Length: 179
Image (cartoon, rainbow, N blue to C red):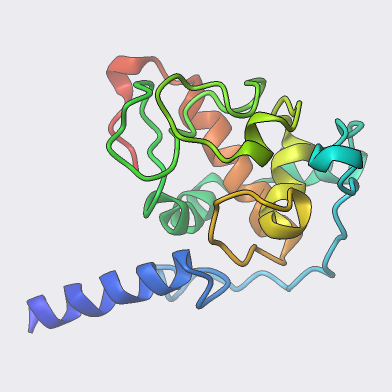
């Protein structure tokens, strides 16, 4: 039975990563469910040539990041972990680039990773606002990118993931080993 349960969890995570679900279920069933927030449209639209303009700081997003639940962000990150690591090494063995240190990094800048032309030519420097807009619906934020992910509609869920990635990226390499 433990094997079947593990298989069921693995399938659920795979489906979530592929857009089959908005987020995986939390392991703590006693945790109160957050009220769903109204979807927030990304603050940027693609500009000529497929690049996306840098986004201005968003006070609403900054407030959500300040109130972020890192434990929930860790659980929500499981859907990212299918393709991305949070280790400092660029060669993480995943099909997507590492998300360690992504905030402040130029898009398409990890040597040796085969980015799409859309990402390579985007001119994006990843900020919380850029990542938030990307996570809303990657295919609309930057048409032509290779990421197969439907997006996350709940703005607080996106903020929780961003805050978790930021917190994990702040840890020294010796402390890494999180998802």
